[in-house]
Image (cartoon, rainbow, N blue to C red; front, side, top):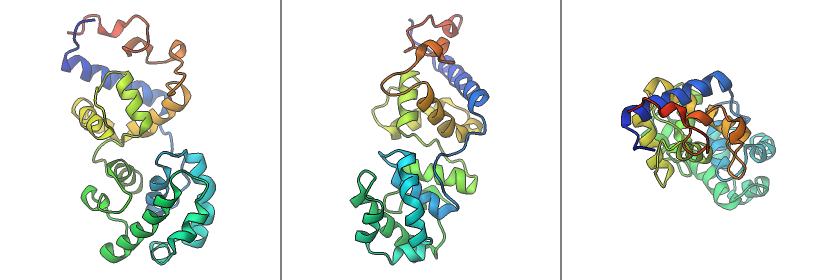
Length: 225
């Protein structure tokens, strides 16, 4: 197949977003949260762990420490015992307490609403910040590239980046800003249902005709120079 032009890649990326919107439009997060603070903690905990696993530990976590002030005063060891069932629980318990302490000490108990400030919080990277800005405050400042988005973007050859951060830069360059906000949630659902890590079901994939990795005739590229 000839090298794809940037314009053709942009058109294909937009088509991907439109199809995902038709299938998963209005999809909601699988994480159980009630406010910006609980969302920060939930997303922080979800790194390299399933949302279902996080939802099993957070009811007790937020029952005991429901606010930034309460969690800031918590013993990380006690937090760790509550979230022990999820991966990397020791580091995450420390981040929960340290993050809460910074929210209280530097931001008067309110979750900050800028990328720069959010990524100052312990345990909060750009992916988490993007999700919090989008879902808690309706601010779209980028695309949250988690493992699903990263995998799908590479399989679609919308990026060849080796890291999620670099992949986000590539996606922002080819996807119009007005489509950024829905990418993460819709692609997560698609990744779980169709384009899984181990067993992608290309034979029933709604993107098979525009996916270079699907092993099927790539009709989208005909006439796209």
